[in-house]
Image (spheres, rainbow, N blue to C red):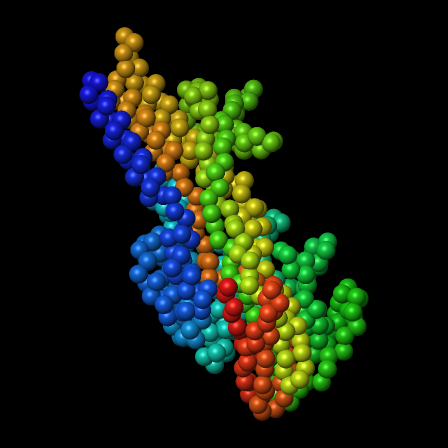
Length: 474
């Protein structure tokens, strides 16, 4: 019997060590060569690294793979190929990512082993890149379809949080983009509605900011300008009073106008944070996880509560993701067109969105993780109790299984550190007038050490609204 116990302990220790070694690296560590080449703007090599990476090729990471492939194809200027992958990502999301089997994996193993379902703001960003791809492919109607899908995405998010929750359920920048897309199609009525909806999101906040982004002056002007174009004089006057500005739109330029999006830096990465909780029972017999500092999370245990010994569950180790910001190399930028300089204004702070949306769902996510761990712990305790015989001796096999569950629970716990990390840290934009014919444009970016870099492009002014996006992912 002693011989059997010895080999059982060796076996569970080996399994635990294997799980520990397999699970110590974060997603960012495992896909680092890809992101290193993205940051260096070496996009062909980045794509090669992505295609040969075994982790992101796994079925559970299919959504991440499609989003990254779509992003890298967009950066390479392969817009048709880019939308092929973004459409694949859309198809996955439309079909639904949840299943009983996947939920069981999350309960019995860890959330890192489940299918990656995407952050809410990542889903909005798919529409951003798809719309730009379609515009560059001169498929305006398809770009307008993406504009409409932004509204559907917002409604889906609103339903998810019952439209009463203060959590992230809409995206002001996406609504601004929606307005721009409608305007490019000469649909000024829907453009006004989109701009107004975006502005109203900012106005709901006491300081008129939305996830770290003050309301852009350009958005305020777009609301007033399109209101007047529609003949909504009262609306235009009301928003002038609300914004505290007086705005008279300049005459339309012969060459039309250009909206430039500057995508700067890289989205934050996820790392693992380790926390510890104890399971306690109140006077009514209800269970709670106590994390100290006043953090109490209820645990709705459906089993026989009388058989749960909370003293046997001394502590629970929780692995939870945390974001780590990547400081962009460039701090700001201006755009100069035909001798006139305009500053870029921040429109979307993905860095802030990532931190705040994770914080908003933290207690709910932590409750799921703790419930999973508690079930494992209760199973471990039950096995160890069952190993005790009436004659005072111990059943070594059952005892070994109990210790195996203990070690498995300890070493299999792993935070989900996946996210779409090739997204920019933030997006700024500028709307500039174009003259008829050739326009020489300079985008001047400033770094923290005082140096600057200039990107030059040439645009043909031909009337109407055009778009251009430029990425500095370091």
